[in-house]
Image (cartoon, rainbow, N blue to C red):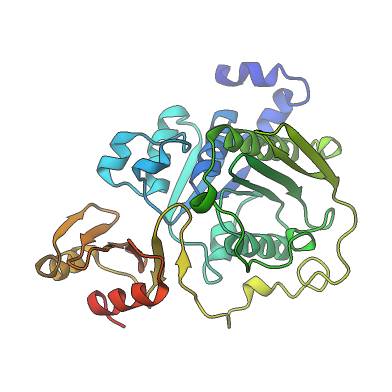
Length: 337
């Protein structure tokens, strides 16, 4: 057994047999922000054999307060989070196979993102994507380690198809104006605790310690020293996912909506196909105030004051506005309808 895992294998509930199971396991982490970086760090250091890292965003200075895998050099380079995380994690444990995917998780690609994995870890920051993961996991029979954090509040649950209710049994809709890190902020310690709850339940599942899994939804407020647990209980009889098998987030007829990203004035728009960054860099250069690029994105500062960030998979961030109509106007002006 690799000496790097010696202290972990000395922990009897894992041992050498559990370590071998971890080495044969594959996980997918969707969202490589605050939760995702802690989750990836734990999975890679624990020796999970294959870790897929999925994120649509790139590293910015405001991330460094809580997103533990990134540093100022990643900001200067303008690396996508998945790429920056892969580079850092490869230096931590070269024996783990890593796959970085710079993409938005959508109904069109979610099955491909989850294929070949034993477990999905939630590193997302919005319920639209969480419901997509929840529905896809329950349709495919893959456990889903849910986690959320905002302000000093955290929440986590291990949701296993056929054994527990799904997320929709507790939260029925992604609509509404709930609190987010954009409106009330977040402190870093709550991130570490939520992700650690997720990670330890993941380890229990992967080593086959099903009888030790926590059968509850845990919530806490670190600042006011409050902690609650609610037994998962029975699924809601009318749940459209785990009971009625309708999986509403996977309906391909759903229109693709503009997405406001957590933590800053940014609207994400998705076009009809991939973008050649070289071509678009040349096309935009004469029309913008400043243009910078790397192998993963093109960033353009517009005369109007906003910024465009283009990704090769066809996504475009319009930064500097929360107004979807304004974002679509700028997109049409510079990218096309």
